[in-house]
Image 1 (spheres, one colour):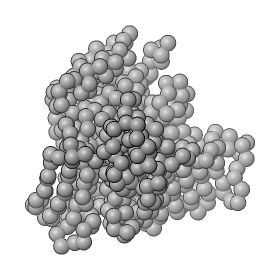
Image 2 (cartoon, rainbow, N blue to C red):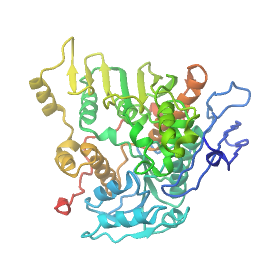
Image 3 (cartoon, rainbow, N blue to C red):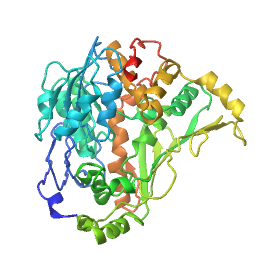
Image 4 (cartoon, helix red, strand yellow):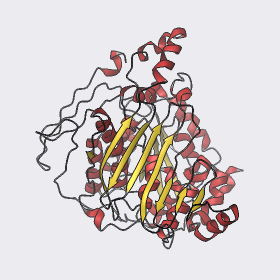
Length: 493
């Protein structure tokens, strides 16, 4: 990588009196802190004084306030501000505009043209947002307003935690794209800020709201699988063409730079989130330790070298230490269950998140499609699967599933997620994903990096709930409360 990406910041965190441990974080390379701008950071693992390098911090502090199951005061109207209108933000604006009981108050991006393009989505609606652009920290002006309740963040990864922390401290609930944090220190920042401010911090893990994932979650709740033994998830998605596209790809090639400077399971939450909900992780069980292994890189540096022959722009990537093509991370839970998470965005393979749930009475697996279920040696027939879906399809899918398919967004799961978030805020209900989920699921990335760098040594996983996982209630998808929020489908035409 060129020196311009790695000049600028050297941060050493000194003694934290409240936790009574020493953490040292080395971060190199910073761009600008603003919507859709690049902050290219490489985090060396936090460490306890006297411990081996790569040992994660064991927090000895006490929980400030338990945000699991916390119901914030109901909001009759949820006033929303969006930061980041590049890849994910505009689609979110398009979905949120359909949900009743919402006012879109602000649109923010570093690039003015993106703000104006997003604003056009709201034509012929009652939404009249103010716009923010052009300045690296203009997003703070929107967060500081007193007429916004929720900040919706869809910026590059390195900006997620700084923006979420600032917004919560400004008195706003936060919905932040995945991953919510890049380092263990950032995970703790999110947890402590949410607990201190009593503001929700939900990571927008949309895959928890996909149809088969919700089906299997409800099946698990009803005891279909018996005791859960093992789960598998993945993010296997060939993104080489997109990540190397300097014209229509990610702003300032930020996602390519992530893959060129880090080695581990960089994007684990799509496969991990639904499995954690099935296993009641943070709510009756918790992660204990993990081990992670990456292959070598067999494609990305080669791609950079091929492109550099025709375009000098890619020369700086020809000697980059690209992450291995396939990463496999194994997790052991406190109650003896196991989770396997895989990550590969640079091999020519069909898309897969696996989503496998295995218990003492049955098994379900989504990919390769078609989705299937078994209670023995043979998968259920198509007729048996239809009967199963009729019996176990959860109420949330029955209520908004067909609308979600029409709205779109990864087949509808994005809209189910957004509708559920708004409905919970309007009815004063706990969110399906809290800050502990955001922290824990995101933490798998830096922890996997530590393990990979240390010959796949096992790494203890921090308990972001500080022990409250033993009594926290499981995620409630019954819709016995709330479900009062309407949808204005006429906007779609």
